[in-house]
Amino acid sequence: MTPMNIAIAGAGGRMGRILIEAVQNADDARLSGALDRAGAEQADAAAFLGKPAGVPVASALDQGLAGAQFLIDFTRPEATLEHLKYCAEHGIKLVIGTTGFDEAGKAAILAAAQKTAIVFSPNFSVGVNVTMKLLEQAAKALSTGYDIEIIEAHHRFKVDAPSGTALKMGEVIADALGRDLKEHGVFAREGVTGERDPSSIGFATIRGGDIVGDHTVLFAGIGERIEISHKSSSRVTYAHGALRACRFLADKPAGLYDMYDVLGLKDQ
Image (cartoon, rainbow, N blue to C red; front, side, top):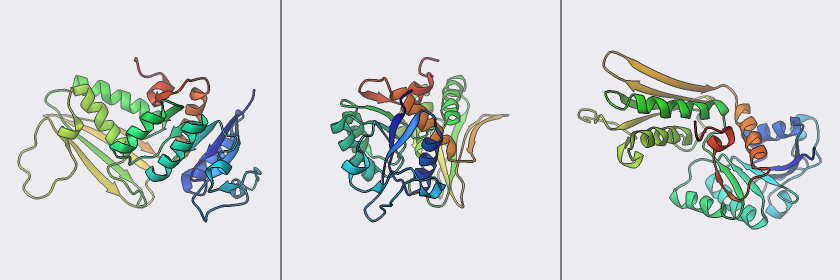
């Protein structure tokens, strides 16, 4: 079996290192390149593992992506959009786990997917995506008489809120209920807010310590409540999901895919 040539963006960051280790440990993958910001170049991307890969960390895209078939990118929107343009022009398939894109950024990803194959998801955990499917089913069954609140918690270093995963959960629930999250989402409460609008979908955000990622959706009725939760204890699960996405993309034409496609959950 010919291994997949995979490049990693943000190679010096926490998630970048976890992705590099996952690629190095996969029998069907090979680390072909590594990218990081200018000034963060390194002689070997896997030196921290004690097993040099012979792959330097570069800031120039033509160097870091030379020979790559796939780029896994869990960085920041501005960096991902720069990588996106290069990958689309050179036929490199993309796995994007970056969150915090505005509408223009999402439109750029959609446009690039006309030229190359992309898996774009706010969360690459297999468990989170199964949770999304459960939320879709729960929302349809609990469409009346239940108030919906989404509570998420992450580490102190996370820069966007609510998390991309929490927003995706809200979108899944809103779609199942035939609502528009932009109209029904409530992202802040303070002071005298009045009685809760039963059609609203509330969000609460917690930031602190080293919490990897906790998400709970509360369906609160009269006399009972249902809580559907997912808690991440390690970022390794995201790396394994990203590799699974690369395997999925291997024989796929240009287009925009998500983890439901990767896991075969679209029609279930």
